[in-house]
Image (cartoon, rainbow over all chains, first blue to last red; front, side, top):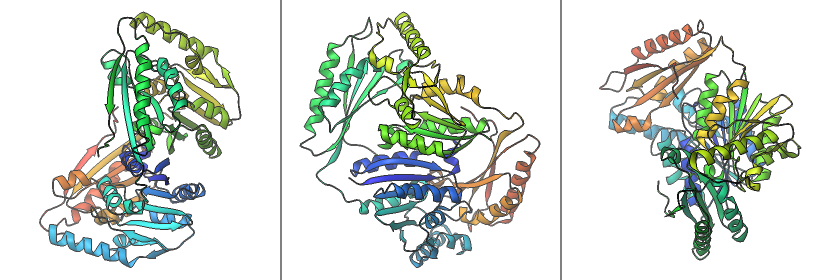
Length: 282
Length: 282
């Protein structure tokens, strides 16, 4: 299984200006690719801090590191400088990146009548760590970057969600060695009128029995309190072959059977709703 | 300035099931309290990993560590065990926590007719690292926990947003030594028809002049492309005294003046919209 760490650069994430939807989107994609996201680290736009976080991640030897944010033409776009520093490499002008940026400027000229010059700031987007290659950005001007250090592949993408998504889906996805025999399966059992703590024992028994399945409870607090009742989601997941996925159904059935023997709150019978959402949407 | 790190425990965050709105909400609150959030780390529900991340954070000596998630009655609620492990302390039954949990069960009995017993799983929520105290949870059953290690105050709160918020606003907030002379100020200048890269120079000049002010550009890509035009937000922030905040106005004026001298796309004049949002809402 491919192990992954995500590093998000951006003060706006730390001061609460922006919700980190990038990490969430990438997390979903990685699950579908059969990869294991082990850690997400969010850090401010300070060169030393950024380089330090990249260095720390490299020490844990994940197969892949994805950095988001800090690519672009402004002073605080320091992702590539930080990665270069972490790898003890120089920054060098990448001709492919220069070509890409020129093409983009031409396109903006033709399509929108923008008369943009190849300024120093724009050329800065083509300064990549020595040995890096660039990844085409179909949604913006800052190319993505790929650079390898020992056994870790580092991908660097912009923080603008549309650009991050375009580079991931058209470029980065190719680098994942998909295991076609495994996929991500999930089931949800939504239970009303039994508190989460009451469900604990039922879950721990099933968990011991099916070791390749992950079972976790999520109280739906706000929705529940709005309706004045208790609601808990039991989320059952597994990355396995189609064949092995019958275990999810078995686990689900056994959990439902156990819940049916439990009593709910004094005046209400437990209510059980099953959700099969193997197809994860965008 | 109080330095803070947030550690979020939860597989659901890594597999993209849940968007990490907790980190965002806490980030906003910390800014308002004049604290500096330096890092957010998200990690899975694995005891060794969790303890490792707490240990790493302690080495960086922040004044405060806030952990979210992993408090509760189920098998994967291991935040307190992880913190105890990181601190090399035993877990011990906290009488105050037992009382709190009993009160909560009584309340659920009276208000909702739930007949709940003090099971082993529920008592597990009262097993806290030696030397820790508990924080009242007005929105749920799992008490928050506070424990000090050297000069770092560690707060542990549940991942359920309503419970995390209640414990933060009623309990944790007291521990922040507010500097009443400073507050968070922000201005936004939304500019249409000038690409982000064109604004780079204007911003770097202002930035060199006002060293206590932070200026960052955010392209509004999706909104902009929907309207078929370029839109960039220049976000100006500072944590300073009321008196010093005039510098924000000066910086804003100077940026606007510079933008007005710039040309936009060939057929459109730059459009400037000012936003003064010093009052951050919930």
